[in-house]
Length: 260
Image 1 (cartoon, helix red, strand yellow):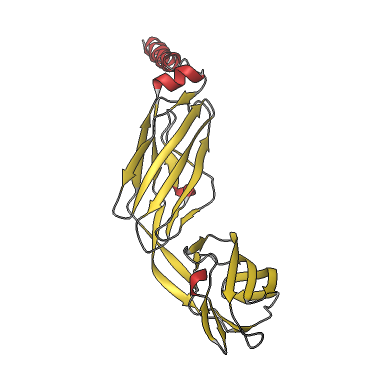
Image 2: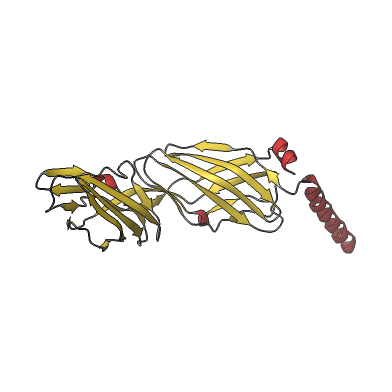
């Protein structure tokens, strides 16, 4: 009797498994886009695709706050027929009042599905920010500079008439979230103080080992005694975990039929 029950249960399991596989007759499943809004951000999941061995989609985050936001994909997962699978992608850092996009994917066996939920359990905000002070730099600029957890490597230095042009490759080497506001970097000369005319409208946010090419352009009459004042342009944010956000997407049947 026990053997009969075991055989029956096994057969039922095989039937359900086989039936589930037969329901998804397409090699590749495409999904409708979906968005979720929170007080801190709007998260959009788009271009989601599922095959037997992966699920991937583009995550777009519009930051509503004056703080940096952070998504740690290793703490995020997609729901699949074999359970929740976490991602192995790199961090996604969203600067204050900016938006960023990143593909987040997972891999596994038999993960193809007609509905999936991206569980953003690794969603953070940097409420606590520490300013990094830096010494003023007389021009011509130094080739290599270390400012707290930031490493700056000179890429371009030129002067054409009144125009002073500097470009640094800036890399963050810390373990928190690095932030750099090029608009706060002033040029001080005997003729007065001058604001940066390049890369001035965006606070750049960095994860560890991430780098950005940052430009500085100033208009100064002075041929000498020009000094770059970093002010409080560099800072580090400590990530604090936010409530998880779930974004569910369902099969886009017309698109799936068209693409298969």
